[in-house]
Amino acid sequence: MMFNGKTIFLAGHARLPQGMAAKSVFNTLSITAVVDTKYGVIIDASCTLVTDHGREFIKQVLTGYSLKDGIDEPTAAIKKYYQGKATNALVAALKDLSLHYNQINEDDQKKKD
Image (tube, rainbow, N blue to C red; front, top):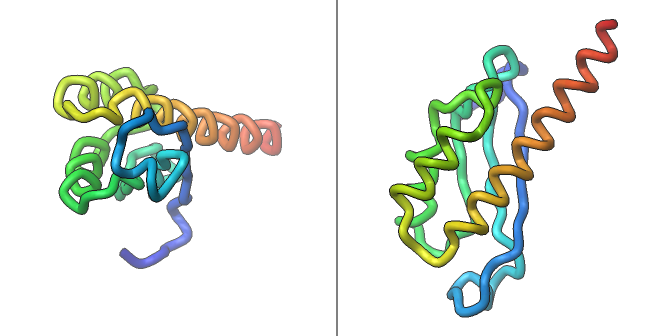
C-alpha cells in the first residue's frame, strides 16, 4: 500500500489477559489501521496477536468498516467470529483506536469552525 495523503494511521491499545502467548512478548495488544480520511473506512488493519493467522483474521474482520458509523458492528464481528482469549483485549483496543479517530475528527472540526 502506498501513502497517498488521503489516509491516516491510527493505533489502539489494551492490556492482554494472563495466560496468552502474546503476553510473553507484549504486555499490551495493539490494533493499527490505515483509515480513509474522507469516509473513515478501515483500508488496512493489523494487530499484535502472535500468529500470522490471527493477525490476518483480524485484518479481514476489520477491513471495510467505517469508523464514522461507530464500532458496534466491528465489535460484534470480533465477538462473534474471534473465539480466542484476546477477545476482550481486541474490543478494548478497537475502542481506543476509535477514540483516537473521534478526537482527530473533533480537532479537525474545531479548526474549520
